[in-house]
Length: 247
Ligand code: IPE
Ligand code: IPE
Ligand code: MG
Image 1 (cartoon, rainbow, N blue to C red):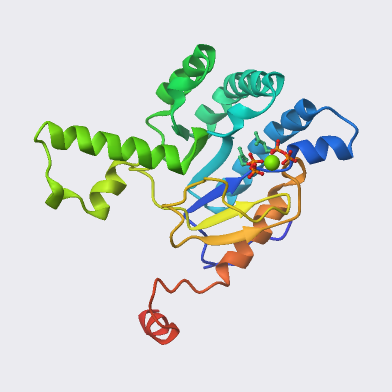
Image 2 (image 1 turned 180 degrees about the horizontal axis):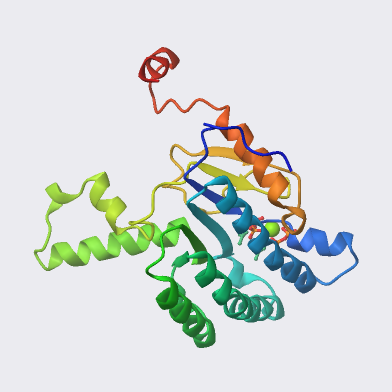
C-alpha cells in the first residue's frame, strides 16, 4: 500500500456508488445475495482506509428509492443484511468514534431496520472523528420533492414567503443539511451515471469511475481515487489563473 504524499489535497467528503455486487456474484458463480454479502464486508475496509487517509465524511449509496422494484427476495435479503451489518459494526464504530447518519426516507424501511438505525445513531451521535452516512431509500428526486412539500407547508402556515427561498434555504432542508457537499464521487463497476444520487450536492464534485466491482474495491483502490482527485483543479466557474493566484 502506497502512503499518500504529505500535504496532499485529501477530499473532506467522499460519496460512493457501491455498484457491481450482482456482476461479482455472477463472475464467481454465486447468488446475487452472496454478492451483496461480500459487498457489505468491504464497507469496513473502505471506512478504515478512509480514516487512515484523513477523509472525514463517507456517504455510501446502499439502497436507492428505485431499488424497491427489484425482486422481492433480493429486497428482503438486502434489508436483513442491512440490519445485520449495522448490529455487527456498532462496537467497532464506538471504538473508532465514527458517527453514523443516514439520508433518504428511512420511514419506509422495515421496522427492524429502523430500530437498529435508531440505536446506532444514538450510540454514536457524540462522535466527530469520522462520519459514515448511509443513503437508504434515497433518491435525489424524492429528496427535492420532500423539500418542496415542506417549504410549501411552511408558506401556507405563514412561516416563510417567496423572498426566503434562496439556495441556502433549500440546502438547509435537504437530507444533507448538516453535511458538507461531497468533494469526490466514486462509482465502481464501470457504470458512468449518478442513478439519482446526490444530484444537487454533486454540483461541483469531482467524479471518479472505476471498472472494479464493489466487492473487490479495497483500500488501495480508494487510495488511487484520492491520488487522482489530488491532481484535479476545481475551478467553481473561475479561470485557472484566478485559482492559481488564490493558492
Ligand atoms: C449494487 O450492486 C448494490 C445495490 C444496488 C443494492 P448491484 O446489485 O446493482 O450490482 P449489479 O449492478 O447488478 O452488478
Ligand atoms: C445505484 O445502483 C444504487 C446503489 C448502488 C445502491 P443501481 O445498480 O441500482 O443503479 P442502476 O439501476 O444501474 O442505474
Ligand atoms: Mg447495479
